[in-house]
Image (cartoon, rainbow over all chains, first blue to last red; front, side):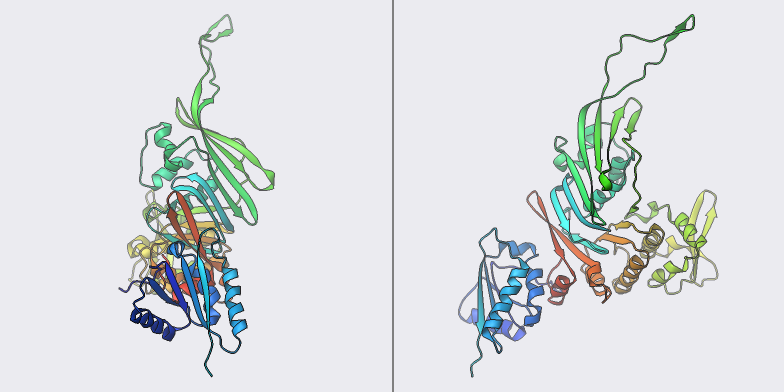
Length: 109
Length: 356
């Protein structure tokens, strides 16, 4: 039986979709970066529910760095703000040191 | 409906506060995290003015007899067996708070009647050398809705365990806790009788047919002092439902509780036990429907990922707020309830995250 996914690292990279997940897994490996767990949060519409759910896992209390990487789509400012809004709703724990970085990917034209 | 629970110093819980319980609430977590204890805490608040309230908790854990002294009778319900601390259990039920505190008293003054030892010329005589009597007691202080409060005392007296009830209990909210061992669920035939008289026996047939599609009818059969529910599964004769497997028997007990309870709460330990994973989604659909139909609440525990998935999958689309999942986690002495609503469960299960 396959194990269900759980939080195993102190550094989480949340990305949008399976393609992005595999890209970052191999990019991290190619650059010799260890200790980062890449998690697919699905589509951006699912992000709010995913982050609310993720923070309820026991191991989330061990997470020290949270990086969120999403596509800017047509409006980088709106993309940035939607993630901020979701993080606010999720009420991430304030009582400990958790660095959160938001990375909005712009499309090349 | 119970929507919140707060517990202090009760058994494994130093402190626990859980909110957001709903029509169907499923509790999970590692061994000894307090799943069953949470059910017991809820039950004990409603099992008021019952001399056997605490002994029942021990019996439920397999202790048939206990030495009549505080260290063995009452200490097990205190966190770390520490009877100096007060236990507090409070609930939010239908928007109002109800609570009980348990306090151990090692010198509870108790009046002992001094009966006449003789009679002279029509005048009764008593002994004069008696001293005050102090007992060891468990004080139970109830604070209920509408500012009703009363204090009862359970004490170890010369004749055994005794209770002084502080007041008549205005309790009108039924709560039942279903045993893991179905053989101890003796009230089923009576409950089925009530349902049958009311012409509602068919309502539980639909639930049971999920597991046993051949079930045609149920009836109560009396043999000597024993009453059993028999079922017709097309064998040419009826057989006891107990012989049809653990899953069906447990589902029968649960269905009867839901159908005869009215606006109450049924607490079920290891709710998916004995039920094959392939029928779990349909069993849960039936339970959601029954809970809604009979306006009853189900709070269950499980270790099974399949059971959690099945419960989530059975949530009625128009009643997404009728399901809550709570995973209990212990961190040192503190118990943290991780509360998931439907949206959070969807996020977790669709990502195949480990939610247990």
